[in-house]
Length: 114
Length: 118
Image (cartoon, rainbow over all chains, first blue to last red; front, side):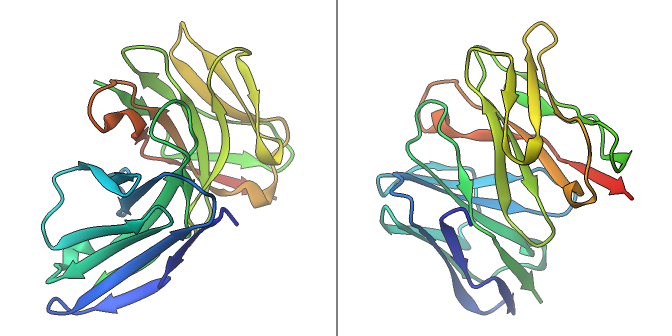
């Protein structure tokens, strides 16, 4: 295991539902990330947090709302999603944003939007 | 612009044979380069990285990668493939543009599916 956990592992939701994805890292890292992995597309970086402050938001639709209450936890709140949002959502953490720090990934949440 | 290319969608290898998964990159300065592996229904697992120094980097599960600055390549290699090596492999480069929040971003290739047959 990488020290990064994600829950739930699978989620099926309707377009009008509200749900949240949770990520927790047990590595003492200061930076956390959300990625989206869709079939036949490169990994897309969604959000970056460093010391609980958002430092990057890559033009993600507002129906995705991140929250980082402390350096160990990261949430992705979902509401009124579209079927094209179905994907594997990956959380990662690294010691810091600077330098050659390795990002360690969680197992992902497989999201299906009906 | 920073970029990573993995020119092969799929690589097929017989068990016991050497394998190579190709990666080329484009960055404005010195790169930090990474290889990750993804097994079905799992997240990405770190294999190895190049920071500086020796061009041959050794990593997990018997994998190694060779940094070639003149060819801007970082190919992943293993002397003897195992069926259990079958997975999706990603090359990534650290974005070192050095402004705003982009310093920490990894830029990933599209991935190469490795299939090792018995």
